[in-house]
Structure formats: structure tokens, C-alpha cells
Figure 1 (cartoon, rainbow, N blue to C red):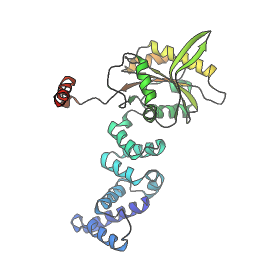
Figure 2 (cartoon, helix red, strand yellow; figure 1 turned 135 degrees about the vertical axis):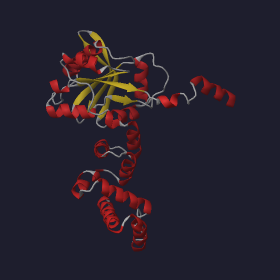
Figure 3 (tube, rainbow, N blue to C red; figure 1 turned 60 degrees about the vertical axis):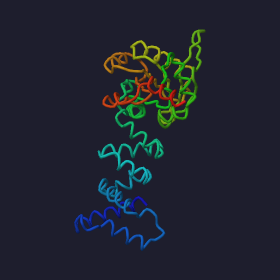
Figure 4 (cartoon, rainbow, N blue to C red; figure 1 turned 120 degrees about the vertical axis):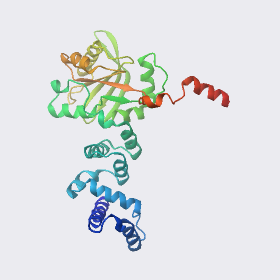
Length: 305
């Protein structure tokens, strides 16, 4: 079907080039196709315009069969509507196929502009992982995570945030990305007769390793990576199986300074990265003044009641 749509789009482009834009090529073609194929759906004027746009965006038929064919036509319409840059379009096509994003998830990811946060996570993966695993890990972890399913009230302790993550585990796993399996919260390990508890432990089926996630509700501090390094050593010794690859650590902080992170990671001996998170996207400065405050909203609700 996708190749048929591409061929129709290519035909429209050729006819418009031959007859000119004022020839109503699309309108006439829509009428002709509806007469010839009365039971076939998807031949409206609107859809024909998308076919033209699709063929214009991807002029190579071999490329269309190899890359765009991995996702649905509905996905393509969203990408064509919302993204003008060719490289970014291809990125979202590949990520949609790789991550299994539904149409709704794709729209959400485009709105969040997630292409800007993949592959830029401060990390030391290349020092401790083979090149292919290092590249894969960089593409799997984000530099910033948006947890917009979490309540906006202030979190006084990491455990408060952990609890909400586990209560919303489906959305949390979707935010982390495809391939993550939840192993446990406050995962207990015993070392030298002492008890330790890992904030969140995951297994990644594509990386074939455990992922230790340490959560901080404040800004990054260099000493945080020392604790994460310790947990990675423990998981590799006590939890990891012989067939598993070296465990990877992810430290999630409210904010981070990438230069400080780089120095902190430099002499660690385990693969890890440091990301920031938000509970919602920042409101643009030019809109902040026009939005009601919490107190104003509270008063409005009281008046309504």
C-alpha cells in the first residue's frame, strides 16, 4: 500500500510539473480514481495531497521500501505534518519502528522533541564497553527524561518519586524506551554483612545487561557516581549471570552540569551515564505571565463550588 501511495504521489508530481499547478491534477485524479475503484478507501483529495508530499519527501523508491515501509501510513502523515527536516523525519521513522511507538506515542514524542535528547547523554560507555555496545547504549539512554505522568507536588524524598514510578510502571517503561524490564524497587543486596538497597533495578534485553538506576531529587553531585559505581560492582558480582554483559548505571538528577559530570565520570571503573529529568516540560517564558497562579486556580475552584 505504501508503495502504491508513493507511486500515486510520484505521478501527481510528474503531472503537476507537466501541466502546471493550476491544472487541478489532484482534484481530477481523485474523481477518476473514485470512479475506477469505488470501494477503495484512502483516495480522497486530502490523502492524495499527502501522497504527493510523501513522494516529494522520499524520491528514492528503494529507500521507501527499506525505511518508510517499517511504519504505518498514519505515522507518516504525522511526521510529514510536524517535521520539516529530512534527517529528523528519518530519525522518527526508525525510532518508531525500533521502539514500537503507537500513533499516540509518536505524537507525544514529537511534541517533546525527543530527537534532541537521544545520543547526547554524558557517559563513559566507550571506556568500558565494546564499540557496538557503547554506541547502542548511547542511543538507548536519553540526556533528559520527561515524566509528565507524575504528580507535580514537591517530592521531599527519593522514595516518594520511586513509589510513583512503580505505581505508573507502564508509563515509566514507555518513557525509558523499548527493551527495559523492571526487576525491582529498593532491590536488596548484602555486602560484608551489611544491607544495601538499589533504588531501581532493570534488565535491558537488547543490551543484555542489568541497568542500575539511582534517583536523586536534587542537582548532581560528584559523590553520587561513587555510590552508583559501588552498586554496579555488587550487581556484577552477585546478580549478573555469566551470559550477561557488564551492568550499566544511570543516575537521574533534577539538574546537572555536564562539565562537572565529565570530571566525575573520568576515573570511575564502571559504565554509567548521568541524565536529568523533569516532571513536565518548561512553560515558555512568554506564556508564564498569562497563566493563572496556583492560588488563583484554587480561588476559581472555590468560587465554582
